[in-house]
Image: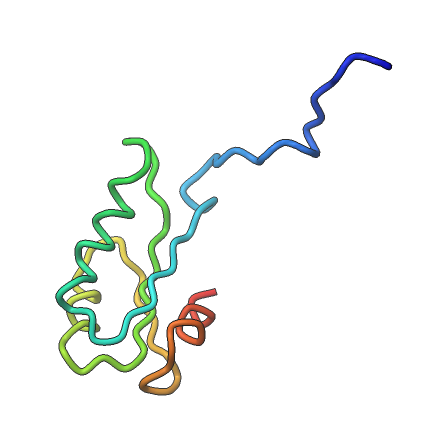
Length: 94
């Protein structure tokens, strides 16, 4: 048996830039929780690294959309139909 060697093809890729990671947060009437979720994502990485954050709103009526649109550095998408479930809304962000 030969010695074990590491292969670049088998190793996990390193995150090299801000565009290497995108976090999609699907929301529907989450005004009370969305700010905490966005802050958690933005504060979770190393100081020099910030992932792209996309909030996809499924037709909120409680001001969630407007709150998210006011957040700097956060991309906001609206689902094509109001009231979509989390899976459908999350797919919109992709």
